[in-house]
Length: 106
Image (cartoon, rainbow, N blue to C red; front, side):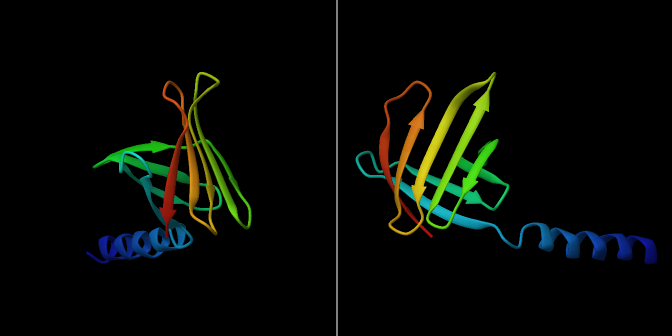
């Protein structure tokens, strides 16, 4: 029982450290009112495209005011977000659809 408690305690404490620096953006398409939820950190980003369906991004560039995230498959860009973290203005560039304007809030 003590081993199980120790393992559980260890997992809970390390799990909080790993996700402590993640931030959440709630984004909405200006024209269609579609919504997206983006969770990101320094070396991690994912987008909830619909309930419990997540797309993970392989290229993450985060500087003071801008977040650029790109999902890649077979050396091709599938989905690319360019988000101004100050104004919330964002551009989504999907692989097959036209570029669209979004507004993201923390």
